[in-house]
Image (cartoon, rainbow, N blue to C red; front, top):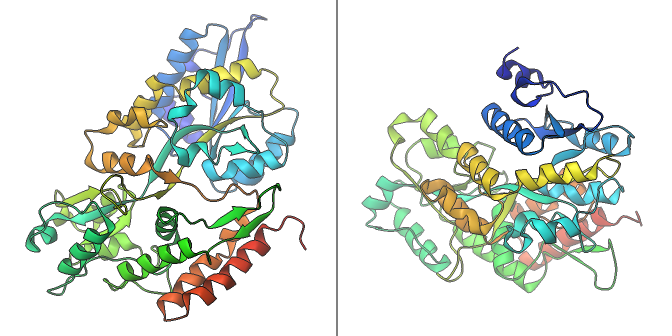
Amino acid sequence: MSLALVLAAGALLPGCGVLPGTDEDRRTVTVWLMRGSTSAEFIERFTRDFEKRHGDIDLEIRLQEWTGIGDKVKAALKSEKGPDVIEVGNTQVAQYVDEGGLYDLTLESARDLGMKDWLPGLAEPGRYNGSQYGIPWYAANRVVIYNKDLFAQAGIEEPPKTRAQWIADTRRLNSGGNQGIYLAGQDWYTLAGFIWDEGGELATEAKGTRRVWKGSLHSAAALRGMEFYRQLQALGDGPRDADEEHPPQAGVFAEGNVAQIVAVPGTARAIEEKNPELKGKLGYFPVPGKTAAKPGAVFTGGSDLVVRGKTEDRRSAVAVIEALAGEKWQKDLARTMNYVPNKTTLASAVAGEEGIAAMAAGAAHGRATPASPQWAAVEADNPIKAYMSKVLAGGDPATEAKAASRRITEELDVSGS
């Protein structure tokens, strides 16, 4: 069976097509990676190289689907038999730790993996109660995708580097039947970046306690972030009561009269498929910050690598993570999949790709959602979205923010009180 067919079937992938040996000294490490996170060719290269360098270890790499993965991982963590290494979403680590199923990798991360250079948006959510359970693997985040022709028509020679300039340029672009920016009213990930830039938080952990989180959208800093969002959103015709997928913003941008959207660089492919005339006319820049000294904060998506607490061979599992998170394979993965490597010091690996380079610049100042095991409950019926729509429709920001903060606090209350 070809490698491609084995991948498609989600079957195990022993390196180089060689079955694990029968020697008592040989060990097999089972790794769960998510479908779409990497390519068959990358897995083949990595497996061949790893098994060559570790002659006593065989790899079984199994591809998993994102749909339903939470329950599957939780079951595996409780089982006596299961994968040794698992790729998980960076914001999922806390809930798995909370259930007691992960191995504490603090010593390994500090000693061998260069944690001081990790992207904060991957490292911070992988940390729980002061210990490192998730090792950053790859990142992706939003940038500004813009129409170069519309910028040229408006006399804008280079992308803005500050928020103030961004607003000024967007006003110039918002003429002649064009939208300066298309920003949906409920794009809460983009709002989160503005809140973080102001020094605010979506939720904060109560001092001197563990697992007591409270919504903080009503803080002065968070309200400043919402005010900037309101100003920017008003410079286009994005719906106030919907997110960026309703309708898909790629389709709106493809119509040709939108100057900017905030999206991951890969959105450009969908835009060009819908409107081939835009090929070669799309540019990218990091979300501007308050000053030109650094880009704005952005929500960092991506994956961390974890070790199942009940694995029988922690040493070999850690060896796999050390390789996947190390410089050689980080550069390979970034170039193969157009991701941001896990360290700021490796950003040069994607310097030749405009969109990925813009993404890497933003990722250096990226963040993730609050590291509460209950955060998924907040997103399930997201009060942040409703709050944004109410403010954009003219509601009092302070009043609506307090109501949304109460909802977040209730969802994060593990006591159920």
